[in-house]
Structure formats: C-alpha cells, structure tokens
Image 1 (cartoon, protein in one colour):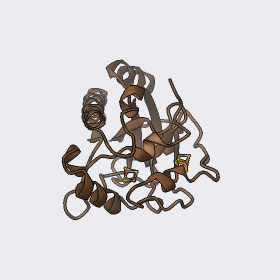
Image 2: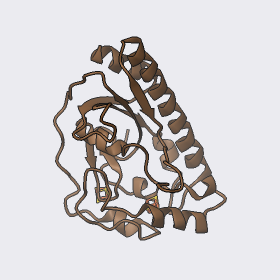
Image 3: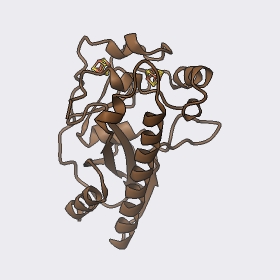
Length: 218
Ligand code: SF4
Ligand code: SF4
C-alpha cells in the first residue's frame, strides 16, 4: 500500500515522496507522516534578483495549491485503505497565536523521510533539487516505513543565504531539524510587508532560494 501511495502521489504531480515515523508526533493519534515535495520552475526562480517577482509569487501559490490537492487525494486514499489521515496544507498557519507554524513543520517530516536536510537558511534542501521545492505533509495512523536514511547537514562553511537576506532574518547558525533556531520568520515577514506589500501581500521573497549553491541547474 505504501508503494501504491507513492505512485499515486507521483502521478498527481509530486516530484518526490517520502515516509517516516514521527518520534514524537505532534498529534499522537497520527504517528506516521508522508512528505510530499513539488519542484519549482528554474525559469521562474531566475526572475528573482534581489527582490521578489510577481511571476515567482504566482508560481509559489500554484505550487501550494498542487501540494494541497495531492495531500487531500492521499488522505482520501488512506481512508479508503481503512486508516485515518490528516493533510497539512503547504502554507498552514495556526492563526494569530501561532502565525508562522502549522501542525508540524513540513521540513521535519521531509528530513525524517530522508529526502534532504535543513540548511542554515531554515529552508529544506532536497538532495535532488536543493531548496527549489515546496512541501506538504500528510499525518496518518497507517503504518509506514522510511525508505531512505536521514541525511546529515551539508551546508559546511557556506553563509551565502545569511549574507544575501535583505531582512537579516538568517542567523547562519548550525541548522536544526525544524529550522527553529536558524531563522526568524517574523523578521522575514515584516521586511516583506514593509518593502514589497504590492507583491504577494508581503509574504514571499525567494532570495535565499535563489542564492543557495545546493540548487542544481536542470
Ligand atoms: S525569504 Fe527573503 S527576507 Fe525571508 S529569509 Fe529568505 S532572503 Fe530573507
Ligand atoms: S546558501 Fe549555503 S548556508 Fe545557506 S542553505 Fe544554502 S548551502 Fe546552506
């Protein structure tokens, strides 16, 4: 069934799919997770210079919609198999109390699934595509097995994202699995709202994606 879920997600447009057990899970009734990655377009990312672009913002939203649909369809499939599942939206917020976090950081599920590691930027870096991906997660009680080992961090001495970030939101610290101590999401968001309110309502930038040397050209 795990392989069927993977093939299903790939058919729906996922670029990568991984599985893991969460220890601990943020929702104990769902101890397993499926991590879904969708690769962003190289041509679109090339429109980002030292500031966001409308083209990137539209692409970002489309990638989120695709991810949410894949997570939704996987949830339906898992329920057909007789288990429960909870889709975590690509851009989930838990409201005013916790505006920058969803039920689980997508990057945590992606790292535990062996798809890549969290960089100093706080971004998830896929082994195949670097930070040129967006993520979503499905939590479930369907037993799943990791297919790949967890990858050690690979930023080394690089500080390109820290140097390039216009908001000073990247600390350049040793990365953690959830990116919590690497990056200040409030600073990032505040900068965007102050300087680029007309693009993406101040919610996207992309400079730290653009400068990362882990991004492989296609
Ligand atoms: S999105 Fe832009 S402002 Fe936010 S951390 Fe990345 S480079 Fe900095
Ligand atoms: S730009 Fe360098 S330090 Fe930042 S995430 Fe990429 S590899 Fe890591």
